[in-house]
Length: 384
Image (cartoon, rainbow, N blue to C red; front, top):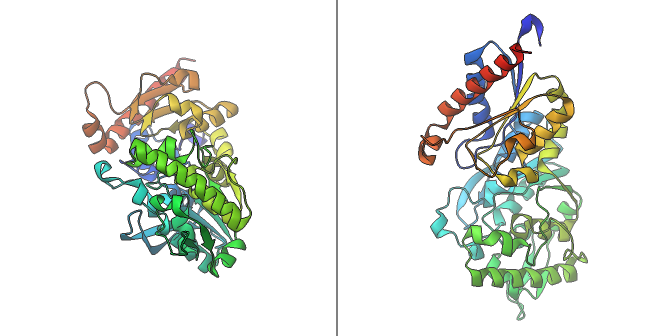
């Protein structure tokens, strides 16, 4: 307890994808906590490298956000932002800012025609701003282009067997015969690249980028097979052009193979996006100093146990002996929250609320849920 007996509550949720960014989730939870008592509340909005990674990096690491014009996954112009560390040496880029799936009508998604061109534009902007390290958040992509788009923005030209340039999209991968590079590549080779990624899927194959993720991005069964064949061809082209064999390397299929393309050209290291932010803000120490931790996500199901952000937060809390409660948009029946170690769990979507209602009124329901969880926590502690 802090001075005067104030309870200390640490808020560290993920974004509620398609609904609220992590910072807004924190704000709503904080209001609920304060409705119950005059608690000492600390907000640490987190991300695993997907949606909200740049904003979370700026918020928890004390950096600033920088904007630039890029192309989205379907070549439309837009404004994207990335975070820059306080010392101006490190950029935290969220690939979903440029080539993300959010905002597109699911019925109109065609990943074979999508590009990571805008991600390369963000990388180039960060380098030109003087950053010598780039942490690239991989998640929430609309693309399966094996990194062709990003590398094209950085000066690569992908050629077919006749020496003609190819469009940097997934449908072109199977036709890549050779790769030429231009000066921007030299600038990237001097930069330390870290890929913030929480999946281990290979570049191609049954558990690769196409078969596992492309169906969620609008690919038909035939297109999935074509994209996988294209990724196999592209891996060979990368090995010939850059001398890097990514065929058996874990995580190269992240973000539709973007990780593999950049890794083949520039190398780097793969690290958990959650771990990067957690270490950067000293999350373990903050959890140890708290009386209660509140975390959450848009939907909790059995996949949460396999390293999703709330489970990672709960594991840190368990190690520090701090109770951790879960507040999520929805909690599936197959999610065993008690087995995960949560002391309490509450969903916004209940039998009396529809998904649409839960999303439209998420801030109000988050506030109510936080108040209910804190009341139960305080009541339980008073009985001890």
